[in-house]
Length: 307
Image (cartoon, rainbow, N blue to C red; front, side, top):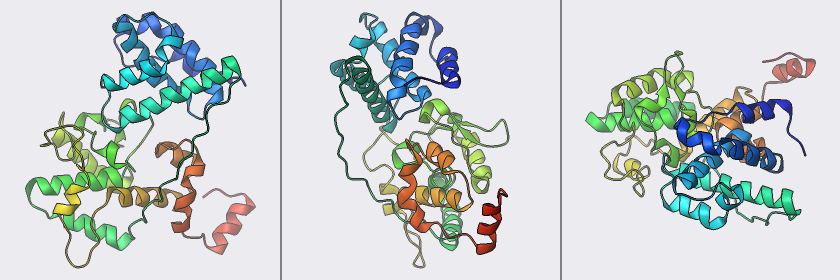
């Protein structure tokens, strides 16, 4: 297994948002480690660079030898995670831990020919998306809540239905994590480890929320801890919409975002990457809610015309 020239170029040119004096001593070893591991994993090289780079800088700052084999020992990875993974928070910490473990497994496979251990997991079924009418009415309800409740409700909806963030991700977003310079709100790639742009229907709301928030969290900034238990789920429990409307759910909002993109014919590979999935296969449970295309549209596409 080899890397193509494009991926090799990305690894060679990678520059993290870390102090140059701390990155430079470990840069070559980080790049070499990722170049060796990337072909044997299902993760993009930039994600591995992000995780291994931060681990290497942390290990080097702690006086550990500059040895990737030592960096990627289970006990070193666990110590890095227990230290709080400087610069990371919330679910990003666990995601980073997963990337590091998969890198270790890939290197063991490459160097020793040992297959990585089988991982058995029961996938969680996604929650159904909201109907268009439901979402519009929920948006109107949230927009009329008093004070801070209004801002939190709109933030939950804009980050869920507008950006497809999972509960653990949306609670991390601060105002400065949203770049609006291009006119399209784009979330900080270093925070999520992927590219996410807000849907047009939510762009104005998200931009206004980001500008008002500045350096504080968009959702529930008054929290006492950054990753409080039930931080996201407890908000809908306290704020229930009237007239038989379903409660707000971060997972249902994310499902609404995914199904909406698929229904518009967006490439599954693009949707999966934006959703933080390792491959389009992760979208399979959502296809049950994607409406079929009209017959004329199917014929047009089969004939060779793009949507």
